Length: 88
Image 1 (spheres, helix red, strand yellow):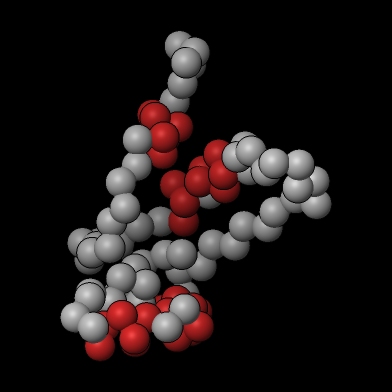
Image 2: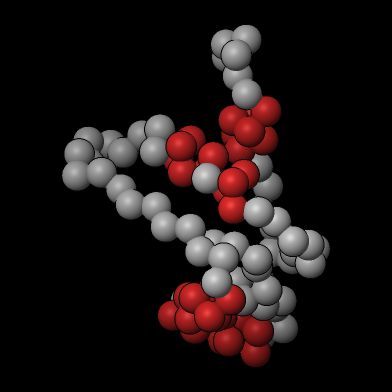
């Protein structure tokens, strides 16, 4: 690892899966750094690229939770970790 390895890159490379969030306000600016690092992921020859969308709109987040079947997970006793997030 180089000496100019940024805090965000270090944080992402040592990430943990979190499915319960603290209810805080966050601005969009720090979230914009995530796609900058995500586009550096290896794609195993998949050369068409990727698209990254960021949403902080609660309606969009709720819709995503429905699409991914979060309600089924909640019915099994798990926390609603998609719909409770501030940003996706």
